Length: 330
Figure 1 (cartoon, rainbow, N blue to C red):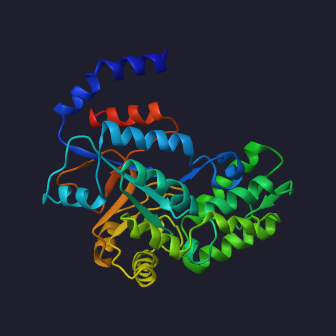
Figure 2 (cartoon, rainbow, N blue to C red; figure 1 turned 180 degrees about the vertical axis):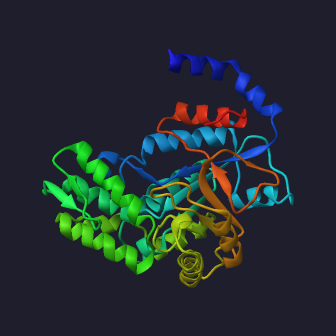
């Protein structure tokens, strides 16, 4: 009944009319990975993957029924330096997976949708998955019946729910780390659980040549930090390093300016603060996207832009976009 009600409401045109009466805004969509068969890596990447056929349908929808624009156009809009067409949509990707280059880019280029790709420097530089994926795999695949964390709490691992609780608790802890401390702790957890991702998992991440290939095709490249922490829970000095060093490293590798940033949201909430927004400005970023839900409006802080989650179906994306433009919470 709920699905049918949504279909009727969409077909009626009421939401589109409501959107015309609201103040203009841009929907910044948040993607991660696009694969032909998401099930083969579900124990590492989890539920954030979009099947290729679904993503293709969603991009065709964006190109046909909305107005695809670039992140730079949105930046000028929120700074009141330019305008946007009604129903503007930006496509973004987080992390830096190889499928962004091999699978998503050809679809985007075919339908004429520009995108912004935010790269986690450590993951591309060392060809390893972001730490939440590594820990997810370890907790799902370990044969250990229990595990004791650094706080001396013992977690039961004989049930799926027990593994998930332990995994989420560890994520809350690791999200507050950065740099070598983060990598050292994650490696120690993998070792203690006696379950690590196979070496072939490195092939899931882009290399720098592929990142440059995205830029060469006209897409925007941005930073997603060095090591994927929750920036809101770091000390100022650690957050500053993540902002500055990722930007400098990427500019050296890509031989171009990097002025766009995406806040990781691996665990805990929020993933930004007024202080981190100020640090991003000091580091030289012109925009920064968060995981807070909503549209980007004129006069918004360009360093705290909201995004819209795309769902895993074409109709679901249409619903989220239409309701967002109509002013309803997504």
